[in-house]
Amino acid sequence: MELPHRSRPVAIWLFLTALVVFGLVVVGGATRLTGSGLSITEWDPIMGVIPPLSAHGWAVAFAKYQATTQYQFVNRGMTLAAFQSLFWWEWAHRLIARLVGVVFFGPLIAFLALRSIPSRLIIRCIVLLLLGALQGLVGWLMVKTGLEGRVTVAPEALMTHLGLALILYAALIWTGLEAWFGPPRPQDHRRGSNWPFVTTLLGGLVYVQCLLGALVAGNQAGLVDNDWPLMNGRVFPSDYWTLGARSLLRSQAAVQFNHRLMGYTVAALALGLAVAAWRAREAAAYLRTLVFIVAALVVAQAALGIVTLMAQAPLPLAQTHQALATVVLGAAVVLAWRGRRA
Image (cartoon, rainbow, N blue to C red; front, top):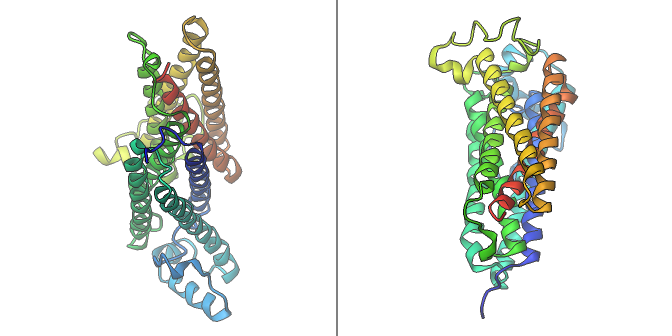
């Protein structure tokens, strides 16, 4: 039996999984913003899905959290009710992570048994499964960095955790598009076209900007230098290099400045691409539309980032900023995929 060149049921499954990963990223952002990530001190992939069901169970979970550095130096004296609020955010984040595995693994086995996955995508789907498992492991290793003498997780560990999640998210979208539309046709590749390069570059820079945003979040850098367009009244922050080479990962001024600079770069490229699409007669209508959508999203995200910074990162704005960043990345991935077939 010859395997199909494309499969829309497979594509829908991959898109739905990407949607669940999107939810995972959003809830993960809320977990970090609320300081909830260290409230569950053990990694139990199977039984950990069951939360405390009795007063004794809650007392045990609370006692384990009280032994952490975060409790000792940040939340000492908090009530059980306050702990439960933290606990439920982290529990929901881990539950959605497990849901990603269920939503992906079960249909994968079924589609393989039915020989419904296009042959060129089978290895990709298996890699996606392994990437999801790696993401879970990295998530626990990240939590461990916050349980060993720190009051928060290490910023670089947070960046790695988010980075893997976003790679999984982007790869699911890309593979879903491959399954929906099938392999490229000869006319999809025009010699001399710059669209494949510039759209891929934009997608890559959006991804890097998300990583820089994770460093801002991990260092709570949105709480300092809240003026704009200057930083504490200066074009270049005077305390950029206070930690030496570690400043690139740990200095609040450095990570915020880098995030700003990359934001300007992404916005300039997106707007430049929109102008080029408007002027380019050879660009297909659907490609122009995608470029305009991505440019609008980038501008909206940049404006929201400025407002969030100047308001000193209140929880609703910070959550919306993180969620919209994931939307921008998803749109940029679709544009990059289309750009390769311009």
